Image 1 (cartoon, rainbow, N blue to C red):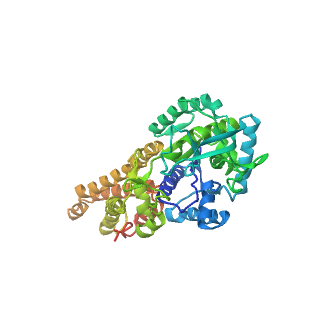
Image 2: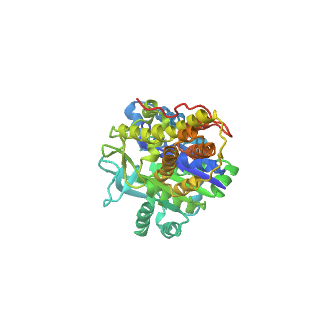
Image 3: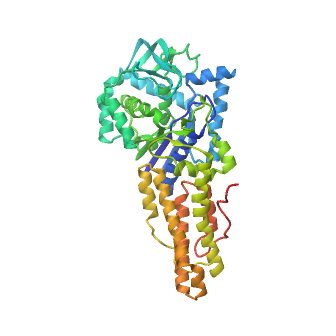
Length: 476
């Protein structure tokens, strides 16, 4: 069974912020969890480099566009060790020849169906979204006023796919999670789809972008270009077959601001090109600071690299997975991160493992004589939570198991069992504690790969434990 998971690819007009880290960590947990279960996994991320806003940002910085996007793309790629990510591929839409080849192929397939036509157009354009809006809509994402733009573009016959897109969503062929986001998409499609512009004049883009096949006066619209990365990254017949055509699950992890592009436009594009559809689109909410959405332009973009350097990657990953709500935006503060780390990691699983190893070494010289095999149902509970993309519920399952282990220590009181010479009971308790801790450590690995690895060393293997050194020391 194969599992293909992707993130949205972010614009590279500025450095990455905590919102990007959220999406990367969520996708990483899904990938690691499936690998832990023995599945074949491919995890893709990358950068969206052909946007007009990147051209504008480079000009403002007085830097060549190619050099500008490369420098920022490198900053996104550098999040791999910072966030302990396990992606298999990193695609750059401007730098990777495979992407341009793939976009051109998709364009030609759609053109062969007669789904493109050219016309003059005037509309309200948001440069932040790189999107035209109807006068009745406006942009909910950016504060800047919409710009009136008049130009001649290529259009895609999106309206012709209203019924097929609706059928894919209603039937569950394409699953949108959470259900509230699915309902929003369904309402949008049921209202009727309008044809969309899928190119921009090359002159307005300063020549930056992928030229429209057969019409070098136009470049492919950045969203048409960017969405294609999920298949253009598979620029090999075997890769495409394994990870798109025949993959059991094709999952996109995206932010709520781009649901329409993924759950409507991308579906229609694939239908036009005659390609398989994604199986699931998981939509996460936004992070805020002081109630305001994290934004590079607003100047409140929290640097994940700085947080990881000061608090550690375990603390950062754990907060993103444990605190962020499935529905509704979540406000970030350093104090909330610190409190969650201390409560769940330092005083929770870290304390339980330290106590358990110390007890085994104190009363049994580090040798476990009781059974260390125990089926707690923990793995099944984690599976159920992640099947619903509920990271908060999955981490809660682990915390409940840890709390149960700490209660067992307090109620069984192994030190008193040893003092009273109740050896069989002592061995049973110690064996149960070691079994629980080892299972928690295994199930924690997708969430905190480095921390779980350190826990595993402390817990040892077989009938021996390691040394009781703190895995999650308290933060200063």
